[in-house]
Length: 326
Image (cartoon, rainbow, N blue to C red; front, side):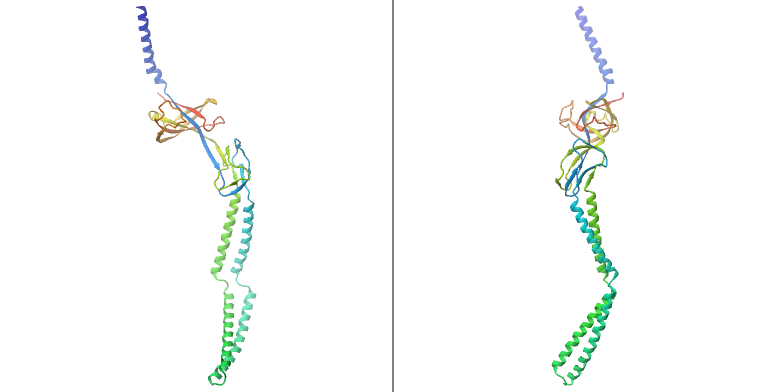
């Protein structure tokens, strides 16, 4: 009988303990646990045009400061081309100046003298032609003499007309269209020179921000095409945790809610807050730990770490906790 009484007493004690745990202890323990990985922003550094690498100042794992020179291209050909363009600009500007100024005074005076000379020659030939025409009308000269006189007359008149036209052209100056075309040539060359200067300036890559070199893809003397990555950097002070919450717990977290992030390399947890909760469900990624079945649908969320330090590394697994108030 005593044994039976002891068994009954233990059963009652166990039932009471279980009831207490379910209704008091378990209710008080409302800490949610999530699992994820450390992520941070990375940036690939590249040139926007083809070139030959001259120097690379940093290697993988080295820290960089904002504005620090990292990579340079060989700019020899660019500088030669710029010198050539600048020489063309000087020549074309001289031509433009001449067009805008008009013809030289000496050229105009020479054209005027040609008009006077050709006019005098024309008058002399005209007299001979007029006499031969009258004689030819009276049958007092041969047809051959008349034709010869007319030919000389036509030739002298053409020479005189040409001299007059040339003189008028020189007096009026160059055509407006010619000046505009020359201006356009100068502007096009100046634009080309600015483009080359911009290329020379962009032939050096500076660190866009403070960070760490993650990967070095090229070496000096390598030929790289436009947009081809040379260095990959991890941006400092921009770390977060990418984690997942299953559908039953989705209503337990809200954007902006404070979270604690635990890593193996540091005893004290990091403080953070939820910066984003995805509105789209997805199947649990294979690299994420979960106590639920793998095919369950989950929602991705991001925890922004308030004060990241050197203990955090990209890809590091972490545990996130969230204490719910009762």
